[in-house]
Length: 154
Image (cartoon, rainbow, N blue to C red; front, side, top):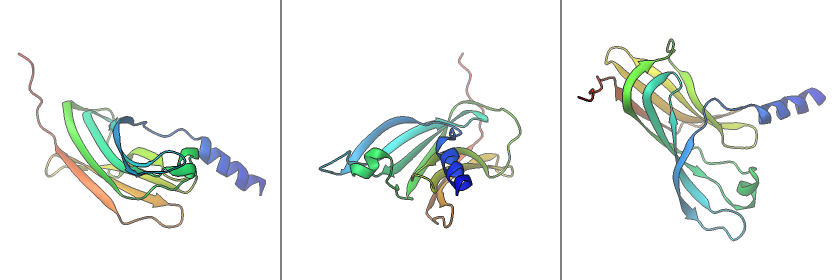
C-alpha cells in the first residue's frame, strides 16, 4: 500500500512537458460557490519545431471541486496550430511524439497533443485527445501545417 501511495504522490508532483500560456477564457456555467465552468484558450510552442504555435481550447470545470483541482474536466478539445516564423527542427521528429500534456483530473486523466510528420505532403499534423489510465475517449481534434518558406524581411 505504501508503494501505491508513493506512486500516486510521484504522479501528482511530476512536472509536465510544456506549459501553456492562457490567452483567454469565457464562462459557460455560473457557479454559486467556486469558479464558474469555462472554456479556456491556451497557446504553446512545439518544443522540437521552432516557428510553430498551437492554440488549444478546452473546458475547465468550476465549482468547489474545480477550484480545489479535484474535478474531472471534459474530454472535448479543439486545436489549431500555425506557422508563426521560419520552421526549424530541433532534433529528430518521431511520429506520435507527445508535444503537450496536461492533467484534467486529480490523477488518472490527461489531455495530450501528439505530432506526426506527413512526409508525402510536407506537413506537420497535430492531434489532441484525452485518455485515462483505464479507458480513454474517442473524442479528438486534428490540425495540420504545411511546411512553407517563411518570407524574409527586405
